[in-house]
Length: 331
Image (cartoon, rainbow, N blue to C red; front, side, top):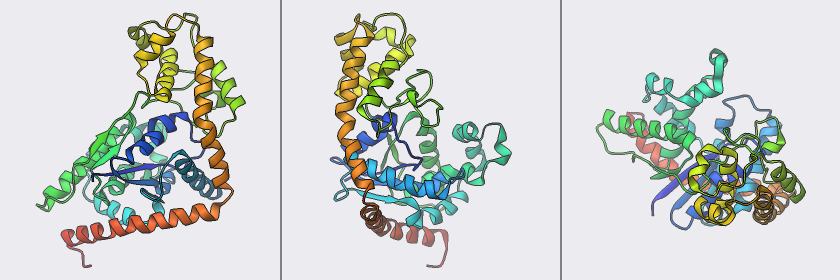
């Protein structure tokens, strides 16, 4: 069976965009792939994190993944810092990747902004650690959003360069998996921006732990325009907020955007919003309830992550040993 690796940062307050763009797809992939899922806490500290908040966020993200349907009996779930192979392989890849490759990474430019001289070195070499995350397990596929495609291309470049440097066909050239109607869920207040926890307005997003009342209020206030719901797919490209709501609805219903347009086109947004609200609540309410139950037993959650780390290490340890032998290190 082909192997998937994917990671998610423990930044807290996961939202509907994370759920539809990543987490729910991870759940579906379990039936077709060997899956390794990781809470990437080492990536999180590329920007400073309050230690207590980071600790809580690791548990919160783990609980969300399990509540959403990650099967810990068939998939591996762990937190990255527990498996030392990630950091060791990342150093070897620091010595494989080229400065020019890293300089092209747009995400570093976006995150560092005008203060790139004050950004951490970890933020700069973040893509090399991401490559190590994937290749420590010789994963064949990675589910990615549009904003991670560039990093995956770098992972392929690193794998190819390592193979070429040592004249060996060792690392696979991992393939991207881009799935679903709503791989990119946008801000409820501005359809040109991605849904994000960093937005100042809580009404810009649906958090996975929001109550039904909060979900209802947020969808009612979601930005639309004064026109009826688009009645043809061609209208969606120019009406970003409408496109976003229709895309969310399509993903939740397992339909295409064209089908939602056919059902609601020409009607009022109030009707679409009422039905969308009901759909979101139906999907997220059981998830939210299980998250709360899991977080009430952090000892059990910690045990799950420890067991996952042990399984992950069983796979990655021999890979790193072979890499060290290839490089010329003593093992």
